[in-house]
Length: 147
Image 1 (cartoon, one colour):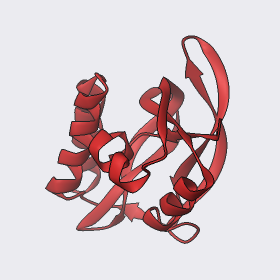
Image 2 (tube, one colour):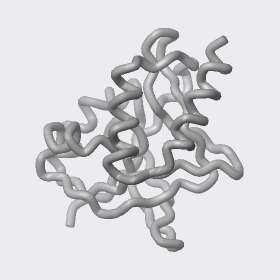
Image 3 (cartoon, helix red, strand yellow):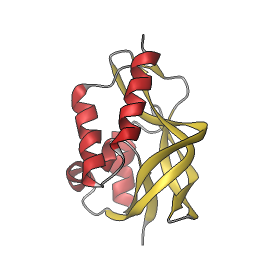
Image 4 (cartoon, helix red, strand yellow):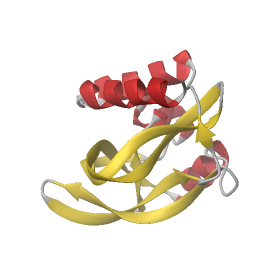
């Protein structure tokens, strides 16, 4: 087995990940407890990230990735300038397990994600039978934040 990687944004999209990280495989679905899905970056082009928030949850897909997958993800995620990596606890079937996640650097401001980017994430939610309500709530909060 490789390294466990937590996806919560566009890397939930199975077709995109098949191209991006061909040797990655799905490990399982999980939940990040006390984290919230938000969008940061530039005003007109922001991306998903997670922030600590008591009582919030984010559905995630846990991938089993190989070193070459991680190198490709580092490039895609703009590591270490745009996103940094952190090991956090993910809840899988009621049990906690440590895995790596990309979190956006704190100096990025709220902004509006592109329609295409949101479509990619939405397809990931559909691919993995995740609660679209959580994605919709994150987008509602984002539109309020960007006013």
